[in-house]
Length: 283
Length: 297
Image (tube, rainbow over all chains, first blue to last red; front, side, top):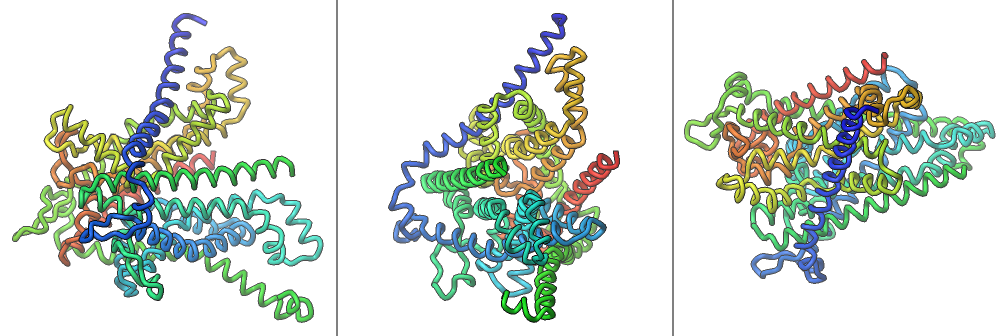
């Protein structure tokens, strides 16, 4: 190689390493900075006490409960619909105009910014359907928002089921539906679980669409009003304490909590993914 | 269920049909959702645009909905959104593409694994956390070192957005680099090209349509980002004159004003939503055009 070519090569190689280091470095910087300033505030008292500024309580128990409620309600709506839609797309629909339209719809839903979902949920679920600021309004809005994630991930899982299973089951006289229930879905369960985890991550991280549908009441709702009350999720809480109350200690602790949850979810998704690869390797 | 299935075949069949219908309805729900979202946003957002006047709304430079004589011009917000997006792309695309090259071609397995987890974590971190980091680290830095009075600025917004678009760009670019046929790479290497020459003169051009798609998706992400931006942009609908101007992009204006807006002000916010929506639809159209072009090749 000529010297000029060699220099160009080295230069590009340096660029690749530098830019990759920037990516990882920024992440490390952000994570370590937030955890460094937040971990001391993230104690048992903070996690388990109520939030009441008049009594000087700044705990996040209501936000943890609120987040869990919203996750549960959203997944109960979106997972059955998403999995059913994925089954329809992979097992029933013939490739054609119809499937193209459904795919286009899925892509469009994935591309709509969360604030637009917020506006829509505000006007439609809160307004037209009179659900008010409530877990129900939020869960319905977020369900639509995370459908593309659930459908795509489930579809991938269904498509990766060994076609021999499907053919074998059908050849043994099982109906199409029996094959789906007893053969295809069970072997696609890890993939569907990944879809659920990704959906959870979206719900936890979302704030723009949550603020104008769920509201931001920092209280644990009464048992008989779980779906009809407004709650505050951890993400919305971070926004409120950081920007409106300028209570940075709580904000750092809440941000740390969010990071830990997201890291755990990613870890879980990875574990499932790795098991999937292993199983396929054997099969 | 099975007991009913075996002896009476007819009910069994209709049961199957019913379940199949549920599958189909679920899939159609997505089409229905897209339609109803469009309809509701437009029904709510188009009338105020018409009332203000389309060109006055889009090209007006003053946004003073709470004044006695209110003005509803959103050009400053459109520009802030577009500049923010452009800045994020200018910084994020090179970093993203080079990182993707690292992942797909250079890094040994261990390092690639670490890098991959880092990207996944970046993708999963909530946007409020990005915003909060911007608020506590980047904004003060700009205030102290670059002489902006508050630090909240277009520049802070661009920095945060360029990190946030990275996962989108890296993931899709990596996938499309891996999809380049092996023969291209091997052929190029066999002809005496170096590894770098092969990557930059053969593989990246071959993965072009995927890379362009990743950039467009990244643009959509930057344009639609709300909560991270709201915490670092300053939320004043000024015309963005320099990188240090306090600005308010469309998303931030909607989210910030919704909490106190009066009736017409609120409708006007839906009007901003319509404009944002149109931007996103245009991006999606370009994306589809690229996808169908590369499919027909």
